[in-house]
Length: 302
Image 1 (spheres, helix red, strand yellow):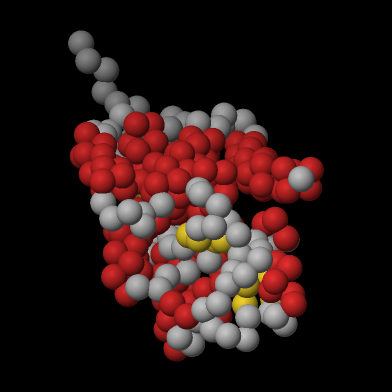
Image 2 (cartoon, rainbow, N blue to C red):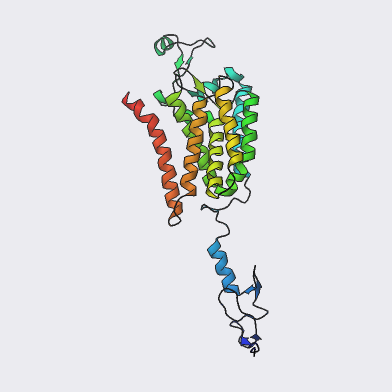
C-alpha cells in the first residue's frame, strides 16, 4: 500500500509545512522559497551556488564573455580603414606611410627625388634616408603591415572576411583571447614573410591575420566535434587562390598566419582546466616571444 506524502517544515521558514524539496540539495522548500529550474524547483542557496559554479560570464575557454561580440572586430576594421584612408590622402602607393608601415625585406632609399632608389651608401651621399625594417630595428612593421592597405579592393575583401569570422570567434574565445589570436596570427605571417620572401620585396595587408582566423575556426570546430568539411573547403579555395591567383599574393604571409592562428587557438582551447588562464597566457606569450626572437636573433648575429 502506497504511503501518503509527508509534509516537512521549510528549512528557511520552519513554521510553513511543504511537500516540495530542492532538486539539488533535497531540503524542503515552501512556495515562497522555491525557484523554478530546468527540472523541478531549487532553493535560493542552490541557485546562487549554481550561478557561481557555471560562471555565466566566463566563456568555454576561460575569460569573460564579450557583452557585444562584434566590438573588437569593429575596432580592428576601424583601424584598418583609418590607416588606408591616411595612405590614400597622402599619395596612395606613393605615400611615405607605405614605406614606414609595410613590411620591407630591404627598405627603400627615400631620396629627395621621388621614386628613386639606391644602396645605403649611395642613399647617404644623395641626402636621402635608408629605411630598412627588422635588419635595422624597424620591428613595428611586423604588426603595422597587417593594418596597411593601398588598394580599396584589397582592404574591402579582407575586412569583409574579418566581419564574417570575427564576431563568432570572439563569442567563443572572449575578447582578449580573440585579439591575442588575431595579433599572433599577424605576427606569424610577418615572420614567415621575413624568412621565406625574396629579398627586396614588401608585403602589406591583413590577410595573414585573416588566415589565422580561418585556422582558429578550424581548431574550434574540431574541438567541439563539429562539421569541419565546409571550413576545409573554404580554406582549400583560399589556399588554391593564394598559389594560383595573381603573382602579387604573399603565400608566405597567408600560410604563416594560418599556422600561427591554429597553434595559438589550440593552446587556448586545449589548455588544462586547472590553472587554465595562467597556462594559456604563458604559452601564447611564449609563442609571440619565440616569433620575435626568430627575427631578432639572426639579425643580431649577422
